[in-house]
Length: 181
Image (cartoon, rainbow, N blue to C red; front, side):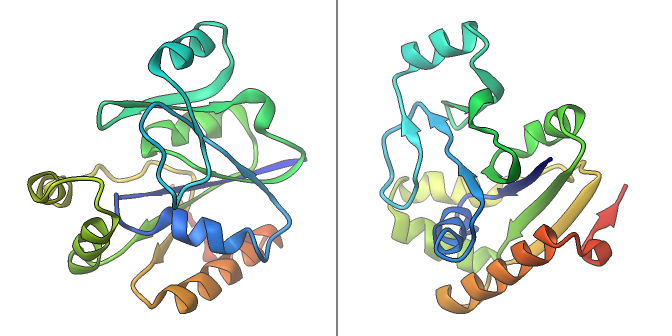
């Protein structure tokens, strides 16, 4: 049986840092994304050209794909395995996964604005104006059947420990922590 744990959240919320930490303690399938932007050393993805992405898309290679910040992102069909699959995605594709798979849980990673700003500055991918623009965005409520919010405001090690605890509870089917539609 396949269990899908989707990780969503605003830029700077710490999704990739939490996922990288969790790989040390979890024996799950951490699914890589295909991305058309320059590599970021904090992320473990496949970085490909736009032309290559478009070719893969036309052949039906992706189970889900989306556009964000002028880049294309995709999840390969063949990368979803039996057991627990943990995937960082856009909130745009949550319902698509819920339509395809029976057992989908979404974790929204959040953090206070001042923490987000500091992380965006440290990451250094955007200039100050773009960072402010990202922070000023409003996001629609995530329309997920099973949703958990994880506030990633603690120091890196403490947050990583709490995140792994959450993932293990989800893997054990501890549904008390889930909100429903």
